[in-house]
Length: 114
Length: 114
Picture 1 (cartoon, helix red, strand yellow):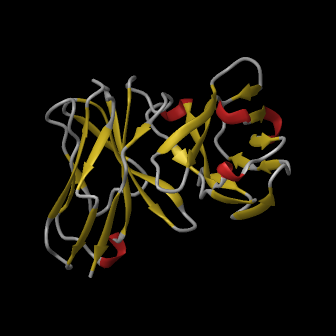
Picture 2: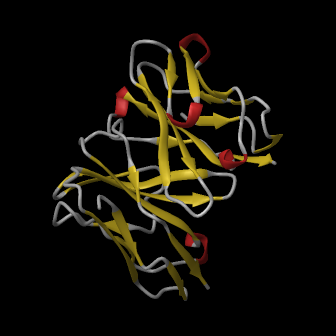
């Protein structure tokens, strides 16, 4: 089944404790992206990747890192999480290396930073 | 700052009522336009998209949207809603000026009463 998977789905952590949220797609998509969803703000793009080893900042990259060492994986790294990073995070991928392609979304990761 | 605006935060309707959700964007130049939907407990999925051509586009489940370039708008419509249309709806814009970027509006929660 074609899908985007994220792990973990739910995470509670404390300020400053490094964490990684994994994202994997099995559709051989070139483009992958991370978003955070907050009430009243919709989805905001954190980082995106056009292909392996090619990444760029979205609208809200501060406090986040990403890497794209393999085409299928695009992990989101929070080196020192803070409470303002409490949010719902979505990973997405698309066939073409453009944001204009149809995005396929993962199920979301709900993060609480205490 | 360039942005995507959705006018309604929460819309409550009865079944068979007509639905129209507003979306305006502030990007100049050519854009690709999308409506995504998130049903309760499900992934975000594409409802419809506009790249070029006929400004009236039809999507899944009886939805349609009209692109009015002069008004920088891409409003979503459905003539007769069903209870199953209860969901959160997001407008998204991909500007040609930054082809890798996808910006979302804040979302509109639609509740359809049976």
